[in-house]
Length: 363
Image 1 (cartoon, rainbow, N blue to C red):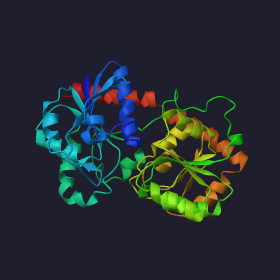
Image 2 (cartoon, rainbow, N blue to C red; image 1 turned 90 degrees about the horizontal axis):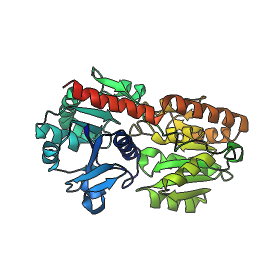
Image 3 (tube, rainbow, N blue to C red; image 1 turned 45 degrees about the horizontal axis):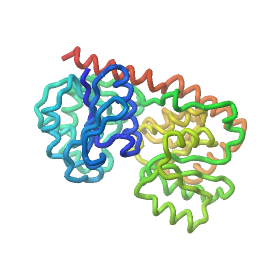
Image 4 (cartoon, one colour; image 1 turned 180 degrees about the vertical axis):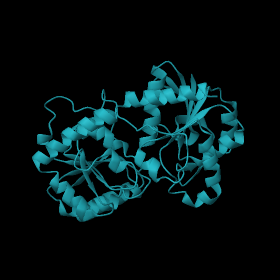
């Protein structure tokens, strides 16, 4: 198959959960013998252009700037119209792609992975909503990443073409490692993600005011970096930043952590891919009870602990609970088992491959 995936950015040029998913899926599809191209906004790519990597191609589409992180790309409709493909795979939210596809007039089969509702650009929904509903309704398949999100999104409600295919982690990469890597000696907690407000960064910093004896590593980067550094310095918090770690370093961080902490507070956190990566490394998770896939991925009392969003006291209590060795050991075991059973990336990618193939056969 000639497959074109469409999103605004792609790993490693931009680091984030969806960007990583698009990259990893492209590697899998290319290794399976398919011709894969990722269309991404030109301003997020080196020299704005054409990159060959790990068996697939990344092509930049014109980008005149961004509005609340959404590319402004009036030329994308022409790119979609002229691209050679047997099937397209769109990753949403991306209003630019939805409108460009409709404007292109193209009738090539397509599927959609619906990662999240629009949150930051919600003011667009009165105008954009009808086009989004039409776009989703005409897709051969709309892949939701969790039953929780499919059941709580008004844009997926009533669609007959929704299929649940979660995001996974590759156990060849994300795994507990050697026996020497044991949680018995874990002496730090770990946050992994972009430094953005919806991640609950301020809640995390507030919670850590009472935990001078427990180190926290914050791995990532983003717009709140300077604010985090200032707060850590002013409050003398036991927090260290690890900026944009490599994939190898990230695995080491997961393996060595007492727990991953994901204190997200908004619906923008639709799944929490970092939870799956940590769990696959045998690391339990502390996350929040959002009406998304987050607490479905990390099951309270099974693979970790789940606390109310926006509550630094509850978050602090959960962190202290995770220092109890027997609880941490039980949850670490449950995390690994759940990751291997439900979030095995190659198995899940095979289901996406089947959805792409079926889309061609059905048209």
